[in-house]
Image (tube, rainbow, N blue to C red; front, side, top):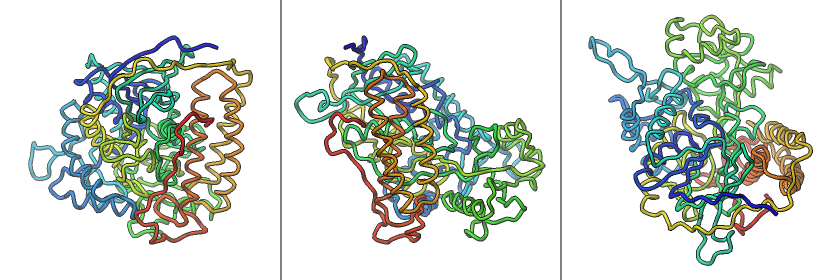
Length: 544
């Protein structure tokens, strides 16, 4: 039997290097040593892929009340209004911090005031006013880079690239007396295959979402739901996982790897059309192409199924070419690389899994039910998004959640428990057929796309539950027999998260927001403001 050779200690362990993870690390750095664990390069995150921007009230024509009401309307009855209001009201202060860090949001000349400039606010689906701060169409990249630069300047922050968390360490799982608490995590170093035992006074899940659970997604490859799976395995409740947001407009091209066409394109006047050139969104919603994402995604799905087409068209050619190239330089260049000049021809688009609205249940400050464990950003279910996230509220939630969590963690972090049991690999041996992992991975993603996608039925959900049970058994046999690899860790996690999505979907006998079931097509008033919830009862060692 072998064990890992390293036992490490930090004050704060942050899992994930997107906007939530970096922002909380910067705020914790004055209080102790922070280790950020990230699976690939530090800049590879959903934040980096965010094109649209950050929703926040910065215009005199806008108001907190309007932003709150837009969020509640999109959330279809499941948002927690007090949390929505607090996050919306705290947004401008957090945006100001980003500007102080050097982030340059796009500006425009002020009409009738020569020489003056103001923020160039965009508008996206579901918003009643222009309130999206953006850096052209590369906002996430701009934010990520500025936060990374700030983190690298902090001597108390260490960023460990190409590391992946395997499991959380708790008092209960260590067999220690007293109330259960999170004590750290086991972390796999991908280059060496070594599993480090990392003790921490507090652990922050900032691992993002689970888009790779689906066959088609706008997310990077690292979005495998790791935080949700790890939290669930130690008994922390997970809520509302049936609400997976499918972005309506992902570039449809055989060589394009899930490139997102920002909702801001529709905000600037782009119109959805069938392959024959017919505008169709007016038949589905009064806001037409600017309807909330769940409505638009279902409409596109319905039009594709009705016609047999494999995509629809997004047309912004009626706008001046210089405007398009200036406002969307990244989208323009990328599409041009694939032979599509968006100033002259419509963009072929399809829906793709984009954002996880449910997650690890937390309060507004990131507290989970397990002391010492916090969750912020997309991995967390705070009550902001409800049954459908309003566009560009994600980066807003990450900023506010990270700020509030850091303030709590600094005052609540427990003592280090240094003598933790190290990871044991037991009799596991090197895998002999890696094709098994890739096959199971592909099967789960296709199953979720076909049975638990934009539109569901009771029968499809039952089939998904049955097949996932069989797949879980195969994965667990493989997991315990072979030494850990990053692919195996991620396979285990997407299987767990897929199962949680199915379980939550089967609990909700209605259609609401992003969860649309043909067997229950109407919203049930009895389920208004009612969350679905799944949790392990033991919190002890598990085979999943």
